[in-house]
Length: 124
Image (cartoon, rainbow, N blue to C red; front, side, top):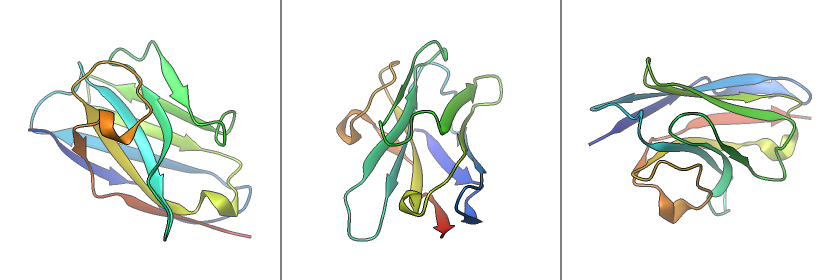
C-alpha cells in the first residue's frame, strides 16, 4: 500500500510561483509512474503532469506546458511539481497519484493510489 501526502499549496497572485511536493510512504515508489492531477469546484479531475519511474520521460497537459515542471527524487520517495506563471484558471485542488505501471500516464483510471490534495488559489 502507498500513502501519498501533498504539501506546498497556497494563495498566490497571478504570475507567481509555487512548489508542490508529494511524499510517499508505505513502500518505495521508485518503480511507479507518478502524476499530478487537479480538480476545480464543479469540474472533473484533470491531468496536469506525469513522470516515469526513472524520470526519463515526462508528460504534460497542453494548458501547463512551459509553465509547470514535474520531477522526482527516488532516494527521498518524493515527487515535485514546480508551478510558474500561474493564472487564475490554475486554481484547483492538486492531487498526487501513483500508478502500478512505470510510465508517465495521463488518465485518472491509470492510477492506483491518490493523495488527499493541496489547494492552490491564484488571484487576479
